[in-house]
Length: 176
Image (tube, rainbow, N blue to C red; front, top):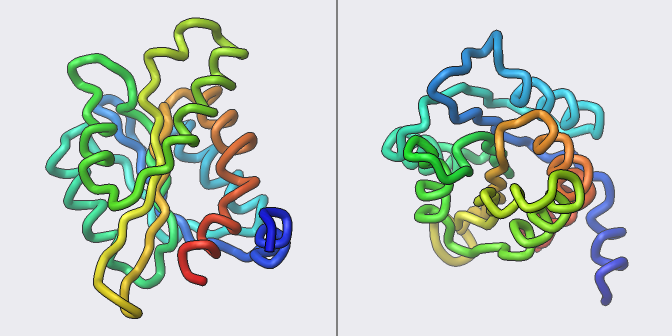
């Protein structure tokens, strides 16, 4: 069975996603990127039973990832913000440490698409994705994780070009 067969078999299944904005300055009312992620998920038939704006603090992000990866009602986690290289950009480090399996192609393709849109500034992005596995054997739970920059343009690019086209398929692949 090839890629297109797998993708077809996964169909347009609804995925329950946690949405997390990592920012030292944004509030829920000012969270344009988190709102955009939630709107795009809904418009593609997905749900977001969890949404939160948190400080870009590694311990808080790590704890949140542990908690969410253990929830049966969450199949994917989408974080935005904290993927740059400034001193306060810590999200990438917390996410990377939590991943059981990485999907290097996500960050590579995101940066390539970003380069086409903004040029060499794309090098500053540490967008990443992977899977957190909790439990063992047949009881293991696989949660897909995406960590993307917090700008609305980056969110739009990541969601429309990469995440939404593959979300159902990727989640299906982790449970089959």
